[in-house]
Image (cartoon, rainbow, N blue to C red; front, top):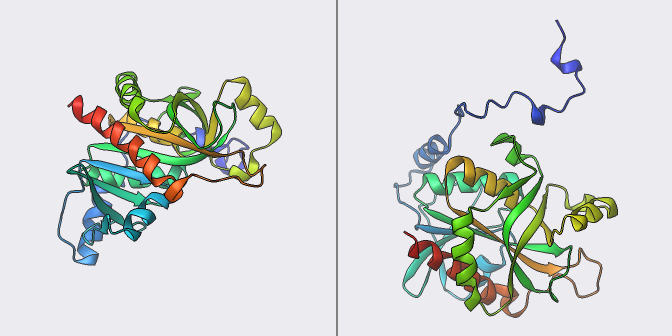
Length: 269
């Protein structure tokens, strides 16, 4: 018998059994976290936000617009609550990268979230405008590992078509331009080589980021509504004034995109 440890094949593409449930699930994690921390059970807001950079949550907290939820049981994160026009939101900062983003997404939906929006900074591939601007990600190249644990097929993970159409319409009111297009999701930002960038450019990809493909694969398999925006803020550090988001670290503009997406989702429910 061949010893599997002698194989040169990557385990990323082996023994996934996509239809088989996981032994470890987010409900068990949250239940035990509440027990260990002696926390009451409290649902998170219907609409939650992933803020991988952490700029939005830091700005909201600094201005007193968001308060930390002391009942959030997540081991690795803090959840803040804030309101916009009378509607409640939850937000988790610094969940950067595909695996961390999906880890938190699983927990948020298990805790009562019904709609999730991610806004992540990204590097420009095919120019649409001068940064900063937004891309409503309709499909994301699966150049990361997490999505391959949720489903096997497909070069891209995609946003639900109906959700895309409604959010696209709602984003017409956002102050900063919001373009609809594709991104490249990678686990390794410091391996964005000229060859990899040219491949992405040849496929008409607008920007590179670290979470969307995994979040969309999760959304598809779990039947959860998730919308991802790429906040195009840089050219991968190739200019002297890269990574600038605008006033208040781009929080005002990002909140407009988040509110537009939330309004579109609420209108359809």
